[in-house]
Length: 339
Image (cartoon, rainbow, N blue to C red):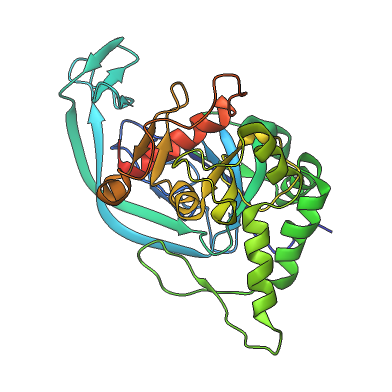
């Protein structure tokens, strides 16, 4: 039986840094917490609480969660039209800060604004969000739907096929421990939350010694096992951002947006001081994929600028981290800082 048997429906929610529909103003999402759309987006009225949501970022699957909360509200919807052909399908261009009209094949610096009041939606999945252990293109889900449409930001999926896909696509150890374990143990209590934070896990007091769990969490966080040792063999015993050599406070960090798996290639990891690891996980620290330059979010720039190096501390003969994984995290960092 499908582990998503209780789900009404399943959806692929596509997030891109310039995501928009029909020339509307760009939507702002948080890949790990919530997704925003309005009535102009196909399938917008069909999404419901209790559905399964697979999250895609820049064309890659990053995780899944349950639609814990669906907030519906009325707000102005703005469509941007080309002043030459009056078409609404303008595409935002972040680098040049203007738009592009496919029909006219030209940039548009001052589009016409077509504003009206309409329905907006925000789905929250923060408490149940489960990152995938590696990157897979979202096009791998074609067999999970009878009607694949590459242009749809919200793609309908078959819940049973999605469950089978997750089970077959990723490591069995991860699936059994993380996915099935979460279904067995996690209880969610929906709560009214208009800020996209999602519901919280229900607190259930017990007699178990949670100090053991805390120590185990530290060991997992440090990434003991082949993954952590692989990073030490590859990069040496130091934080690649600060140069710190105290290994007791240095952790094995996955570049891709997930945590805890031991059987990963060292090219998809970094050795980071504990607090720097947290900054990286929160996308408050970014690494340029081409030059390994280290940038900080404005919120932490003043406190951390003197502590971090200008570039990753990697010897010239040392193999480089995965560029594909760094590119994905670089996009997340830019989304966080609004670049």
